[in-house]
Image 1 (tube, rainbow, N blue to C red):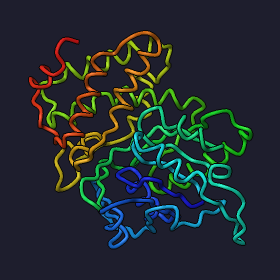
Image 2 (tube, one colour; image 1 turned 135 degrees about the vertical axis):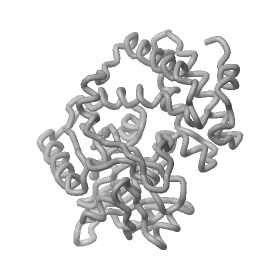
Image 3 (cartoon, rainbow, N blue to C red; image 1 turned 45 degrees about the vertical axis):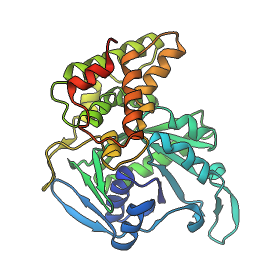
Image 4 (tube, helix red, strand yellow; image 1 turned 30 degrees about the horizontal axis):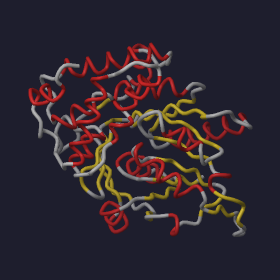
Length: 340
């Protein structure tokens, strides 16, 4: 197999870099300054216990790639960038070893949706025949081009994986996930096959509703009640909508194996993906697919999720106006939220 990471930012570059270091065949699809840095100097992966620079084949788009029938696509964009990436790659031709075009990527290649939220699977399924949902538990940060920070000791990350949509060949899917699990285990990752992977993705969504507070405030001290309130609202909406998600004890048993430690030279606390978007000055942010997903679910069933909806609007505004984490204080945030 060759793992082709579509949207190699923090997650894709860290996962791809470590896999390549341990002997897997990897291709990174990156963009901008990060792509230029990795192409020139390799990707530097900094962990609590190791630091390495890995030279990984890297390109910026499908016109520079010759896909083959042994490629596995791994989508690692943020969710609000997923549809553009999926559409860009769906119709790329796939070749056999003799160079014959066998069909398109959407027809022939599996795509693994390794990103936050619960919307990317449906996006991918509009284009691709074989979609595998991935619940990612892999704390990584990228604030500088060409460098990613992985905040864990081995195991570096835990991934629940399962087919999304009805499979025409369950045995082939099981074999593929098992093969990926074996190969990724060599790079100190844990892959767990799940028949109901969305239970894990909804659990991760619950865990991510507090990301917006760190993105807006920087330091979330004094905002613990707001986080609890956003999570409680999320749980209430899940219950009203009949959405099942992994419970607290089950999650701790699965994810408790991760040991998150400081990385030398970095603060003990580093930010979420939403925090990273504002740090890097991006004009868009994934909050509409995190807290905004809670508001969407609520509206579908005739309910409302006012706190999560307001946090989503504030995050959009912060990205649009180029605000950085810490531009708002806790009391400023409370004033913006008003009565909810």
